Image (cartoon, rainbow, N blue to C red; front, side, top):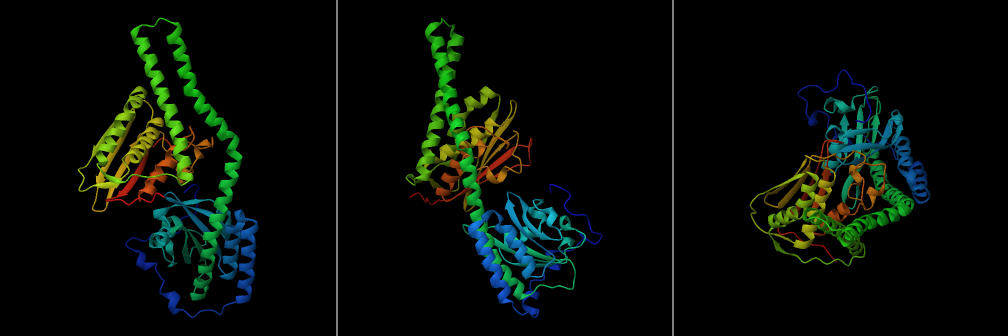
Length: 430
């Protein structure tokens, strides 16, 4: 956790307990339900709808205030899943001051809620989730997942800190309504935030495009002038030609990234799906980046398992995916480091892992690593370039019906990018 979120409780984390010891979901059906207060609920929902339309950046906080009131809870919150941690995006009640603290997914009841994608009711959850230990104690916790694009992305929850208040089916009904608001509110908030950031970064983006286009051109022009006006020995002439070729490739890659992104946004991209040898694609990609890696002193190694069957895909696009991942890994790996590519198979999927020993990825950046132009933000780590390469990776892999994710133990700990492709993959290009 980012800070010492909660102090340990003497009765927390008892040895030998399992999830079944804290799971009391059956009580939601067996407990008598309190009488609905539809008038209060209608006022609250109307206020939330107004907030949703007028101030989406505040809707999640308004939602937890509403949950606290309607469910007569002691603490209420919205937890967003960001990589492998949950962040308390909105809080109300006893622990309101802990807003924006984080908790590892595996150490949080929210992880169970998202993994099972179903409502949860837990009693004294700190007995198996010691990171949740607190004073006052979390006696009962009612959690519901909410979704974006069909997948759970967070939870909305209420907590009691005494045994006098117990949640029932009426609380579950109210929280189900609020979970729908949470999904809508998150998506509107996210869209508004991205729009603000895009608008704010336009000038920076144009400056970066100009710089990245001008840099290779300046190097090319400089060496051409040297070749034209000076008598160079063979070694220096070879260096000049190699430098020119490298910068021509960099310029070509940059322009191709811009064109590819334009095709994806305009939905004019066309894939040519064929049965392919994924190992061959990986080896060709590795060969294409090895000169750059060698010049930097980075070793690139591949390990490809024998395929049990073909993967269907666009060979050229998948090679671009691999080259982008490898180029990204090399870029952020210092001299003497290494980049490893591993291809493995199971019955349904081919999995490619690209692991580097480089500077790693800060936890704040992980949720955005595949966002377009996000690297234009100089306050984040792994900065540089247009921030299109990894966005294109995700978009092309998703067009192949696959998935891609990034993991890192933090700055200085390297990173791993994992691509999953279904065997006999479908393609969703328009």
